Image 1: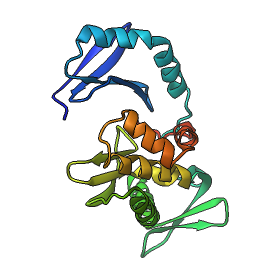
Image 2: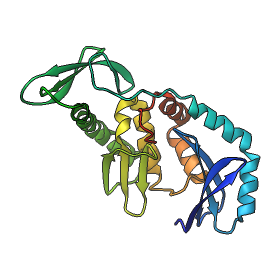
Image 3: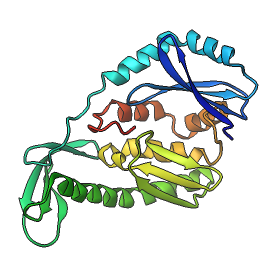
Length: 241
């Protein structure tokens, strides 16, 4: 359980420290902006944490540079010809104004048709598209959850989808609840599988420690490829992750 959370600055880099009842110190750099986080045992001093970060400065800077160079979409205007993604494929948006039901349909391999009422604002058009993304994830996730819950011998109490600005997914081992980022609808199915497995393993091991990594390596040997694919694809305009 986290007992303290604070930030320090090391060589000009902001580092978030979370002190937990764990045995080993874990350092990570997270997309999209290269947020640096250290999970540290309760008994480890701040000086020791600083030394650990200093020892990894070159690696941290490489990771931050990689995330900074990751392609990002400009703000979406929801107009004809604009690029939008679904399951890793890029589609050109075609907007159709009509009375009645508002919905999204894929036409062929290249077009994403958005049917909206005349006079809809950009925000209203986007809301229709986001609702469609949510519907797609609600269809894609149950088979993956069923498959991997059986394989890992775990059971979630509940799961949901929401827009998150800090991570692709989240798990509360105490309640057995898992959340998935709505942005995952835009990513390849392999990336979605990686997040499902990652979050389910947290039901077996709360922390990103050696046991967690051993489970991930044994159950999903190519997870590095799936993670790199996920983090290499264009991010939405907003700073969500």
